[in-house]
Amino acid sequence: MIDAFIFDLDGVITDTAEYHYLAWKELANKIGIEIDREFNETLKGVSRMESLERILVHGNKQNDFTIEEKEKMANDKNMYYVSLIENITPKDILPGISKLLENIKSNNIKIGLASASKNANMVLNNLKLVNYFDFIADASKCKNSKPAPDIFLMALKGLNVEAKNCIGIEDAYSGIEAINTSGMYSVGVGDKKTLKNANLVVEDTTYLEFDTLMDIFNK
Ligand code: G6P
Ligand code: MG
Image (cartoon, rainbow, N blue to C red; front, side, top):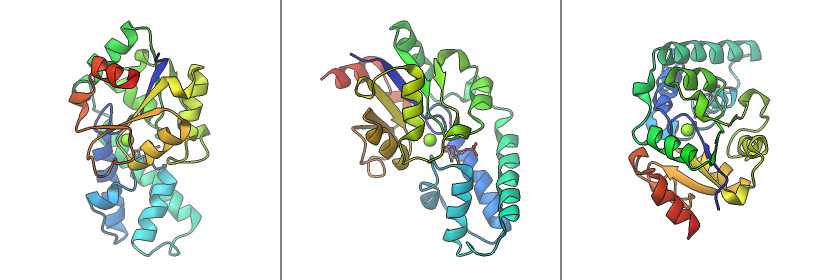
């Protein structure tokens, strides 16, 4: 029996993971720090301020800025990120996702969102997907970033469902850790090696097929 599917947003429902990367890269370059896609993997699922801290440590500049300066940097990154996502439309929903959401709904299974992004509502609005979601966990009320399970636990509570009857879908290593710790079945979207901690890994969202997921989950 399955009660709910709980989704990550960035990199699962739409390719905003790429925009987060571009925005951080722009900010990092301004302060003389190089980041690449491999390092970016460690930022996926991580909150805005913690991502900045990780970038500063990566560039060995963790002691170079005041709290005010760091807040300004995080804000600048966000302004750039928001300018990138302002124009996204339903065309930016990753392949297979609309059909999956449709199938989950028509089988009367609940749908939740567990994203660390404070921009999640704006993204879902632009994608015209808000109505599919029975509960959207509020990232601004979540203390501990993924890999802590907090945001998934918040979604489980909001949906009033039991972890063991739910599937969580993520594109980040830290996100899969969070799903696993919460007690749900974890599905990773992306590279098999990066997401080796997941119960099931699919290469991309086209493989997130409702019947297949149900078969595997019910085994
Ligand atoms: C998601 C993304 C992260 C991002 C975080 C916070 O988890 O995977 O890359 O840093 O959300 O997003 P925000 O939009 O609040 O800066
Ligand atoms: Mg993600």
